[in-house]
Image (cartoon, rainbow, N blue to C red; front, side, top):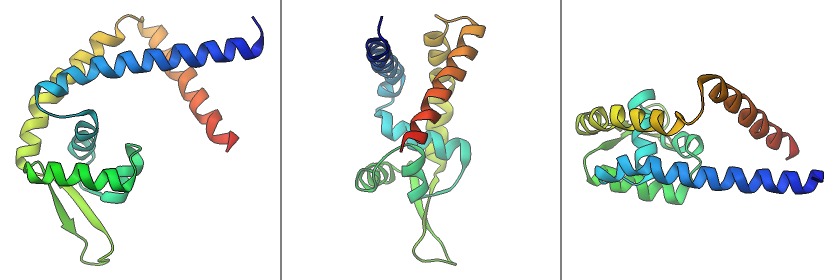
Length: 145
């Protein structure tokens, strides 16, 4: 197989696998009425604590317009709240509420078990190899820019 053909095949295989895995992983969140972006925001705040709204968008790879929409939806549901920075009024933090913590405490163990089940198609060694290879690929793309 030529280098270009192999690279294209790898791209297709990674893309299809990613799509199927993400769709399967989303099933747990859907039971609780969350889409993948809403879950990602809550999960970040649940594990990392209060974050500037701009950083949340960067960490979960979401544009600011979309970020505002998601945050507004979660805030209306009482799952997170805005906390204004006293030192710098340009900065707004997002913080998970007690209701958000309660929801994530219910969802996350089930989500983690589901992800474990999805990834169990690979052995522990294969998972470690996949992590290293995919990380290497992702970092190399940054170098192309």
